Length: 97
Image (cartoon, rainbow, N blue to C red; front, side, top):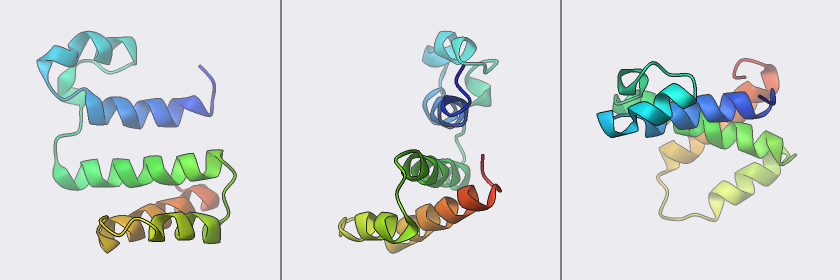
């Protein structure tokens, strides 16, 4: 698997594979089963923010460009936007990979 895709796939799988109906998919993407999926709301929020930060880096966005994109979504809670921007910074620092 491409090194760029693995962090995205891992997070997306943990967000998706949360019920027994997804056990076959979970196994295909490297999880044991749905028990490896993320069901805790705080963990799910963290994974979503990390996905946003990783994708922003994948597209080559600067921090100001990403912040601008986040700002144009008025219905998204400010805490969600802040978490995504913090995750973007953490990706840049190598903390999230």
